[in-house]
Amino acid sequence: MAEPQFRYLAPRVEQDVLVLTITHSQLRSTQFDLPDVLRDEMLRAVAQAQANKVVVDLSRVEQLGSASFRPLLSLRRQLHEAKGQLLLAGLQPDIRDVFLVTRLIDEQGSSLATFGVAADAATAVMRLNAGQT
Image 1 (spheres, helix red, strand yellow):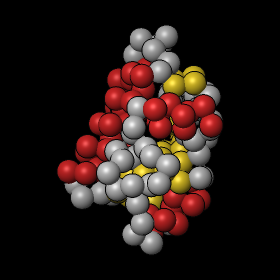
Image 2: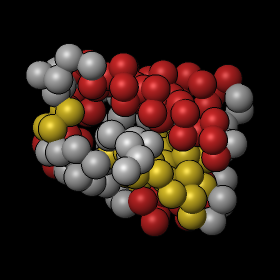
Image 3: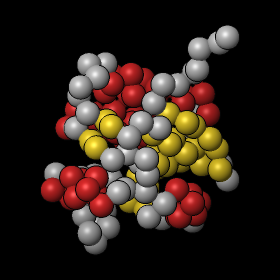
């Protein structure tokens, strides 16, 4: 039986937007290789899909460690360099608070925030296709 291609992601394309659903509820550094593997998986999924519009669906994530920001920041940097777009979606209240406290997102959706956010993946896809980040 073949190994699954991704350990931490379930990628799919919706209306020309790559949606990367993180499948693990705990993104903490208790798993030594998690940040590196997650980053590699995200970048590989983007390359395979040849995507320049990406949504990271965090709706299944219940706990997030600081090391888990690295994969998201790497993905953002790569997409920014390629003139692509990225939105985070489905942040649970506790996860949203972590992003707010670290100032990676803001309540007003300012363009100065590191990440744009949408309530869910479907809304994020719609916003990216409308040119709204």
